[in-house]
Image 1 (tube, rainbow, N blue to C red):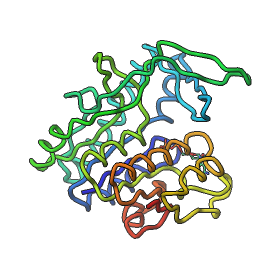
Image 2 (cartoon, protein in one colour; image 1 turned 30 degrees about the horizontal axis):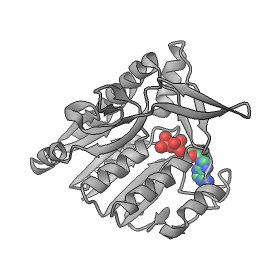
Image 3 (cartoon, rainbow, N blue to C red; image 1 turned 90 degrees about the vertical axis):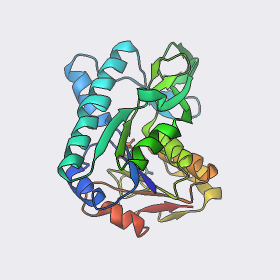
Length: 264
Ligand code: ADP
């Protein structure tokens, strides 16, 4: 049993990735859609707004209108595209967002403490949060009956409001809940790079105790969340997390051969 997350950043080749994935059995797929969301929300006259928290993590501001477009892209276009392609490859995929059957439940953030132009600012009412519970029974129901879950944010708050949550951390929570051995996070980079502009500067191994140092020293922007997700997965009992590239062929298989950045 493994969990694989495929990102939504530019350059990812979903056909190559899915062809590779379809050769495997007993997995859960989690996906993103950030690039598509940025493009379409901009076309709709609602360009994305990102904020940086006081602890240095970047996130998307999510008001109701953004959440509606988020649903269109993540739970609509991206989710159904992946399910359709998996069905064409003979995988009986079922697409769900975290609000369906309360699959991913969590806490809405009461306020975001962000840095804007060098000054601290508090933002209230943002529709975002953190997953605390996974409805494992629902996942088991599907897996035990040979369906392959394809899962996307948003999650649902305890007050039953849809909340934007980070896809990598979502995959980590699912891996923990299913007691998966391996979590694979694929994006548009070979793994964690010492220098994000130099693809040959791949860091191939990170011992668990050194994740925080790598978050501070090397990861910029959204890469920080991938390492945070890896840390949460390992703390929850997942044996290894592998960061790999979804732009080229056989990446999943290569990740299983421990290519990319292996965190354990
Ligand atoms: P996805 O949407 O595929 O999950 P993200 O865009 O959230 O992926 O994160 C991947 C991005 O993180 C890369 O495209 C890269 O620009 C950025 N990044 C920042 N720091 C690093 C780093 N040290 N190594 C690799 N990528 C990094």
